Image (cartoon, rainbow, N blue to C red; front, side):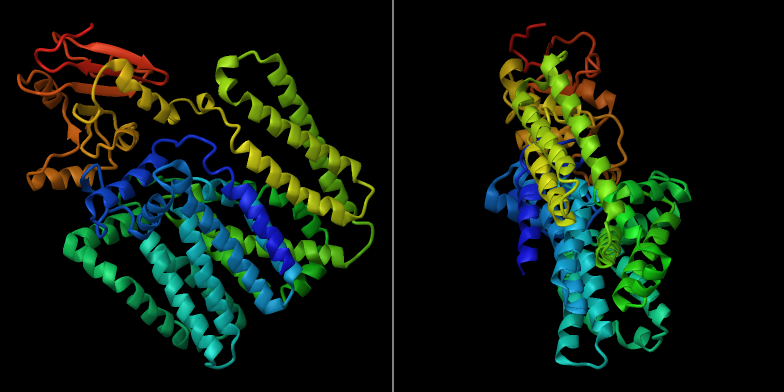
Length: 562
């Protein structure tokens, strides 16, 4: 278990420590913050809303997890990103459990878990506030428990428990991101069962997990239908069928090969050990694939990847469930390489190249910071940038100095150095380098400088800033100027039901400005469009703060500084 403890320490330093280190980013992080904030504020947890209108793109469990995190840690970036980090940790733990239970090899299990956490795609999504990391953790739980149940020759107490856990994970995955919870593990397990020619299991295996899954999701399914009878029509038809087939043309159409570069690049830096794994040769890989667990892992990588590649709409994060089983295969190859003994040349060369690249990159960063040609872009984070570069330089230097030591020394250095760089580097990103994608600090300063009360004014903004404005000012009633597809369904429903839609037309906006009895009207936009929101003939004041600007139309009777 000591190896699992080392992986847990890596998870704490690489994932949890830097969560609060960078500002929140539009639009995704503010969207996934505002929806649970509105849930908590209104006490309505059944059917999600965004800016007070219906928002049925995702189920509710991801929002519930964030709402619970807000309750425990406050409404901040750490609490917002914590569920995603825990989702990555769950994925790593499940593949540790898979190898620990099937092969009884603690070191191999810990290596696979560490390589999963070291995959760039897993790390990037696992420290960012979207729902893909959480659903990947649950999907990995479905696949792993389902596979371990398949290995049981008869219905024992252990197999029953595994099938119950499989159903629980399936229910949680469905409540996080919908029917994808069934497609990915079903493909992985179906591929393995076909490979093993275990046709009978297709008829007997799914029933217990299916019943358990229904028990898990039924209370929310009924509650969502009662809260809004149109929820399931929209969620099933629009968000699943039309997205997969291309019936809703805006759903990220891409060519078939689009996801392949993300699978390869997303495995780095863990993939730095891929040459080591491949060096064992075809015969050794043939022997490895004689073991059921590796045949299952291969099925869990290839078939879901082909499924998402066949989909009309594609995003890189869709293939995130492929990375945990990919880490299992990578760990198997690396372990086989070291079992073969010898001088470990391929491993040593790979780590030497990495050490050289690290050293060059760190020296270049330090030199850049010393010259400091753009001080305004790094002013607030210069010390942390120096610290990150220094740790990277130390990491690269130690890898090079240990090139003649036993391979274990460099092996542990690879993971410890990466954890240190990620822990410090997460706090070293200057907000100004993110630019207008991180408007929270500017929005917080804006009311004092522009002279308006954000709790009383009518707030109007663009679709790109609407989530951030609502989150920063705690104003879910913010209005938008301009069209956007994201809230099209919610706006249409609001208009049909006689409620206030989020979107304002330009005519409605001008009529609002010219209303005799009204509070201040404040139009907030990114600073790159300084003329948006102006109404000819009206007196206003315009204030720019960093990456945003505000046009303030004073309430009648107030003086304006034009």
